[in-house]
Each structure stands twice: as C-alpha cells, then as structure tokens.
Amino acid sequence: MSMPAVWRVSLLAATAVTLVSGVAWAANPHFAGHVRNLGISSNGSDTVTGKIAGLGSETTVKIKAAADVAALFACKINGGGFTSDPKTQTITGKKTVGQTFRQQNGQATFSLTLLVSAGLTCPSGQQPVLACIEYENKRASFATQSGQFSQPEATVPSSAQKIFFNTFTKECKALFADNPG
Image 1 (cartoon, rainbow, N blue to C red):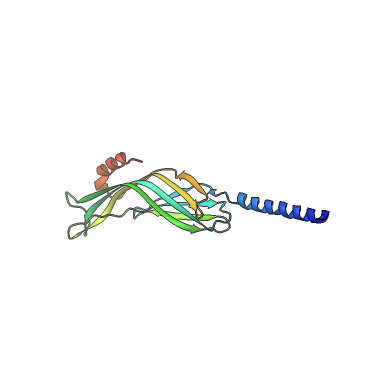
Image 2 (image 1 turned 30 degrees about the vertical axis):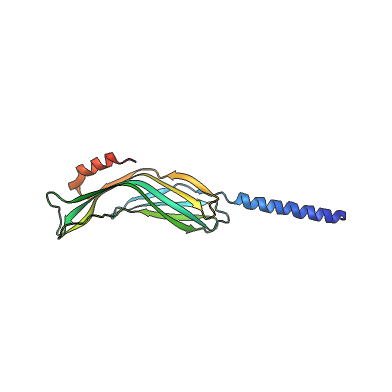
C-alpha cells in the first residue's frame, strides 16, 4: 500500500471513530428545568408538566407521573346539599399515569394529568362528588424507547390538597394527616 493510501485509510478510520463517538455522546437524556405541577383543578385533577432534553436520536420517550393520593367522595343530593349521614368512599394509594411522547429536536415536552375517580354508588336522587383530595410525594420519571437511558425520579415540589365542601373539613383533615406521602 502506498503512503497516500495509508494516510487515507487512517484518516477514514479516525473520522469513523469520531462520528461514532459523537453519536454516543449526543444522547444524554435529562429533565430540563423544573418539573412542575399546575395545582388541583375544579375536577380534582393535578397536572404535572416538564421537558426532557438531550434525547439525541431517540424517537420517543415514556414519561410517568405519580403521587400518593387521598380522596374522599360523598353522595350529594341532586338539588344540592348532603343528607345528615351521607354515603362516602375513601380512596388512598399511589396513582400513576404514563404516556409515550415523540421528541422534536432532541426534546420532549410533557403534560400528564393525575385524576382519581369514584367507584361510589349513590342512592336514587343523589350523585357522587369529590369532597376533598390530596396529592403528596409527586414525582416524574422517564425511560427512552431503546431502554438505554432512564432517569431517577424527579420530585415535583409541594404537595397539594383541596377541600371542595366545608361539610367534610374534619374528615378531610384527618384523611390528609393519614396519607402516607
């Protein structure tokens, strides 16, 4: 092999190594900025938002939001108000929601809504309503489609609680105090 041919082969090999290394370094998925929550809405949901950056050539990313939830549902008279001893249902535990997002320019912006629904069956002339709810220990996590990258959970600052009907203030405060979050 002539000297110029050796240089060309060496140059091609060095270029290939550099390009391959560049691709490996390009992907460094991470939470960009803070993961935030929008607060409890009128229907009792709480939305967690944020952005994942550094996705490189990953096409999608699976993002999850989770929280420890405590909720009290009660049967409300259709005309308004509650009976003197309303039928109620307490729900506690971990609530998780996840979705796959497509990346654009190496980033994926997400918005995930946590929502608890009642399994309460009310007597005729009444309907189930959310009396109060608390979300504690909110967190978000992600994994890339290839499974090559994942990030430890990012905590979402603050817990959130809301009492919708003052009739249940005492029961709700006791429920919130017992929430494992």
